Image (cartoon, rainbow, N blue to C red):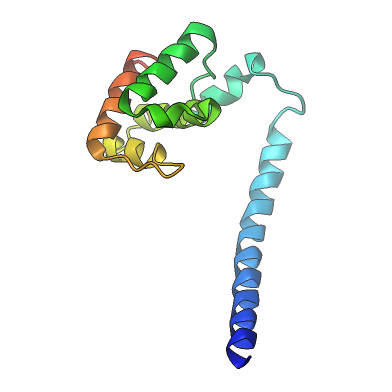
Length: 138
């Protein structure tokens, strides 16, 4: 009984500490995001804000299919959630174009989700596919 009470108290303190720490920075970020972002935005109107963050516009049609095929080439399980794969691809393009120091490792970590763990070599193949589709080197 004493262990349960102690464990519950520790869990409550940790939860409060985590929420307390994250709420300050989150509320600041939320305020900044809300004040600078347009209230109604479509993917077609996303060009300006996407360029500001380094993200390429969300691909559609054949371009989307090509990005998903490049990711699927590395591991077919990565495209079960297509939206997640596209988001990861766009973020990886921002890293590639932003001069990430270890882009292969970054890709491997970014695409390691839903129980899938990729290697740096897998990340390299993802980067090659993204350079051929969504974010060619400029």
